[in-house]
Image: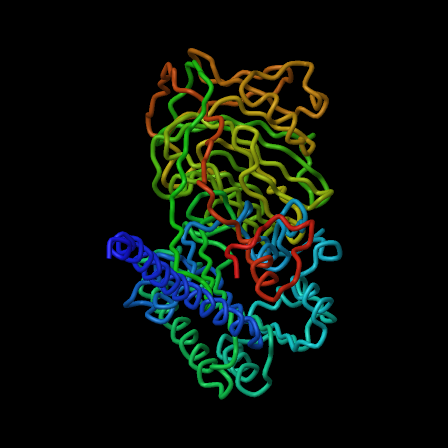
Length: 557
């Protein structure tokens, strides 16, 4: 009995140990089974046929995508990876945005910097359809676009099964639904244009009923397209990737460098994606250079006139550069800073550089055609060193702020800019344009050649000297720092500028210690660029990202 009693504690301990082991094994088994179930679900998903639909909505400002305006798109956003801080590059033309969305690279590579697509390189940087055609040649692909330039320039015919340029968004919708329901297309793209048309007509204002109605209309289209996908008999056995994106934002117009113009959105939807909203706003620090000057106060009935400059050729084959420093104290309407034509119409022959509601607009007209490029924010009331370069060799008109390019346009369709009238500052050639420019203008420089960015930047914050690389092409230069009198005296070259008055106005001057804007340093806090869409699509399809891509996949599948 003593021996048996001594064994009892040992037997109890062993029993407890065995029970504990069984309990541990049971819990581990459950965890393993759950893990196996998850792996099996992902495996099953990966075995399903993959389908891709990329919906492009031109000029769609994401803030318009509210539950009341766009219930279908808003619901999709809430179920997806959604970036409302996505970025397009400068210049913010559709050519640049759509090229990035198709090629996976920035404008430095694809070179589609304006809507003429002049000089664009889609040989070395083709659309993502090229990688799909090469890696998965059996897939049926389609590109249906209302804006024909996408298919005419970016998407090569040999890379897609079907390519259609539609004459309306109605036709685009009908064809993409046909591809989804009848043609069993594997990878398809469709482009809608009406929102951008409404944006141009309404200055992309969310208070415009026209713009909101266009958003509502495209949202209905998206809803019908998504319904067409879900109504497929094979839908439950398919693995769909839905991408929705726009090519640019809007700020009165687009093409310039403001954040509202650059701000786009990207939606990526797939059952393997955990919903995520990426919306961190950028932070900006302004850098400037000190500046002290006594100069004329331009205001109502006070303006300047340049002499006739016979050696400044503004014909359709000649280049030129106009530089000046400007500080605006009013930001309403579109008063002239410098120009040589009647500003009653932008089509009139000549050049006008105006302060259009606080943003510089450079306008070029030949009597029939016109070009407008917008950039340089004057609302900060700092000095800005502005340069407008017309390069007839490259057929580009470029706008610089502090030596940094902010906008560019193709000027090939605009011919002779010689109006027959001399340039004026603070007024157009009629001397009667209302309102007058209000603020300060100095350091006016006209060159009979297209200055490179290096020269503009090197002399953006100093006076010109005889060592300037293009000094031989200087036609007019005045510092505008006279402390009295009615003239901006010429420097380095003879021509001067007369300061004129009307209606008994008097010339006054101010001594200003306001700095010259240099640049904004902006931290975009990791916001994705539009060129991240192609690698995302390719990743979903199991296709390796080309090494030359600038973008990375937005999500992991």
